[in-house]
Length: 123
Image 1 (cartoon, helix red, strand yellow):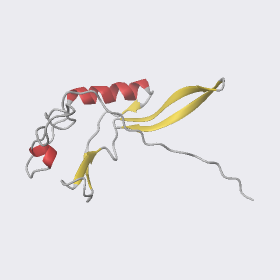
Image 2 (cartoon, one colour):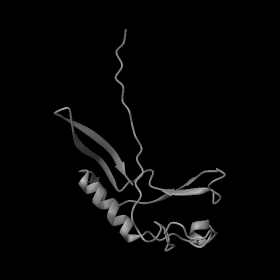
Image 3 (cartoon, rainbow, N blue to C red):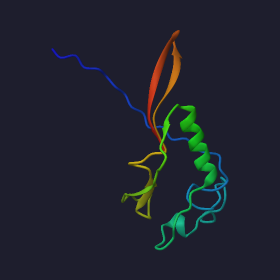
């Protein structure tokens, strides 16, 4: 019989405490009236171009460094096309191929032993 090793992967999403969204200047304050924190970029209007939030980038960079990731000198964003009812613009901006940080880790103490958790990427 062949022995198998179980490997479990997690995808973790973290909410950043920024005053504006990641790719536009719209607010992020909870409880605001519907459709008051949107713009052509949020809505995916033709011709509108996203602008990266510097604070969000700084937070992501700090996270990558804190997790001992290798930080890529160059990175870029891509549109991933999805056709879901809750995503009316039909795409999501992501870093699929050239992430901000790669190959990091975090060491955790588990029952008196150090366990190293590998971090594939930060984006």
